[in-house]
Length: 103
Image (cartoon, rainbow, N blue to C red; front, side, top):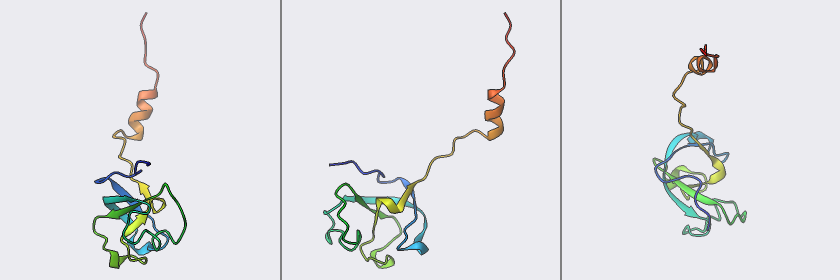
C-alpha cells in the first residue's frame, strides 16, 4: 500500500472544485486509503476507481459542510503548504556576489 502524500498534522491548502467556498488552509486530521471509508468513497470519488488515492479529513470541516457529505477530500483537491525559506531575496543576491579573495 502507498503512503499518504499528506501527513496527519500537516497544514495543507484546500482547492476543491466541488466545495470552492471551503477553500483555504487546514490541518490534516486523518487519512484513509481508498475503499476503507464506511461509504467506500463512492460519493467522494464520484465513482472513479483510483486505487492509490487517499481521502483526507481536515480539522474544522464537518461532513455536512461538504457537497458529497463524507467530510473527506481527495488528494488532488489538496496542495502542500511550503514553509518559508527564511532569507529575503536581497540576502540571496548578496550571498551570490563574488567576494574578494587574497592569495
